[in-house]
Length: 258
Image (cartoon, rainbow, N blue to C red):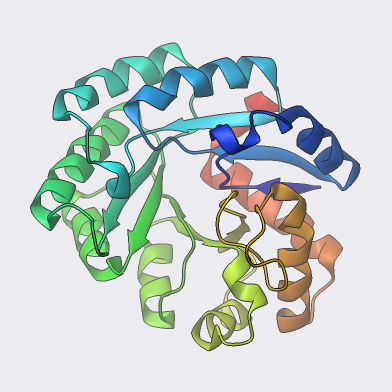
């Protein structure tokens, strides 16, 4: 069984065929999905979808790249929303050092506030860390965050990988690993212990090699696993099994979703 540890199946691009995609995934042994939040206004839709589809587990948070139009007071509602809705993590939260992103001080304020809620609820976090691994590591270290989580779409160095792992995080490995040009990521996944990573698609984004320009879906999880299998010289069956175990360890409440 595969678990897609990071996909945005709540996005409107899936509204017309979400159920069909989930049925096809089931037939290809992709059986469970973690859907991170991105905006305050999307939390209610996520909650409704989790009640409609038992294979979807939700995380709630405000994504750093989509902070335009968000109000800081929305974070005051995050803790209560998570307590009244089944939640496996706080996320997707973090920092996004990219053109058109808001200034870093604003992003840090949102991140710190959401991390504080995760600490109070004793929940893991799903980290968005574009060009910000070192900053986020220091934030987590200095805040004495003890509940771990996943670093989404990891593409950093071996040293950066080890730092997050030491803090109780796993690395999310997705479509990037299917490209031969991703030499740094390939080197990292080759050396990682089998307990230190999980599979993800970031659907509808982060397409696998050969499907650029197409809508990405969790149906591509086996393709990600195949690339990892070739890199690590391990069986796909073992990879599917171990990464599912890893998801359950880092997000312990996900077992309620099965």
